[in-house]
Image 1: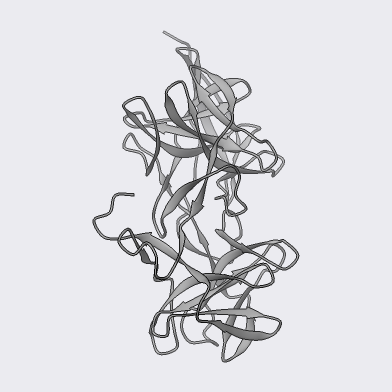
Image 2 (image 1 turned 30 degrees about the vertical axis):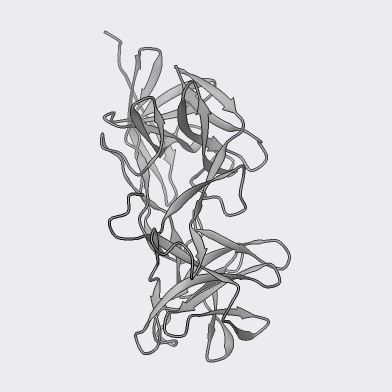
Length: 315
């Protein structure tokens, strides 16, 4: 029976650094580490970590989904934000408005268990989902969760680390799909100790489809398998599902993401305009409203809307 050591250190999480009591035991060649993980899901106030990227500005900077939460503008109006703004830009009253009272849309992460999250891969007959957990000296790392196992398998330091507690990725607010290679709209899920972003990825390996992690410039997906760490190409990344409003209606419905001044439903849309601008979709008029150059600009064609799975459709 392996010996157990107990010692205290700090684990980095998206929202705080907290002291954690750790127990580690060498089990069948893997390191089992207990740490504190913190889940994020849905709309979060004035946050940028993990915020959903849906577009790009005229200078190529990523644009993330936000919505106004400012009583000066009745309703909750979806719009765009970017790193360094600390505000949400949205169209209102035919003008571009900015508010620092806003919420950002982040992917749905929940505390993991043996049941796990949404399925994005498999290891033979075993379903695999995306998971993440803090690693001492290693930031917030991404890996895979095997159905029925109460741990997250993370590739790190040429090993396969089994860590608990952990978070799992769910298709919560919006639908998620795989796309080949690295996408500018790839979901952000973790980070290295130095702050370098980590993105969930999926790659075929040894007859299975394994979730793992990647840097933007790696060109491969880092997965764990058989106690080790493996860099695999080709691979796919995970992105939010956007579709033209007249497409995919049997599988996806338009996500309700806010409300207008008259309480009418609003969605999230994006359109190719000086990059790919992100704004609000008005169901009542089938139009995409974006903010740009001080104005509220309206598009009735050529835009896409953010989707969630239709009722009775399996993710």
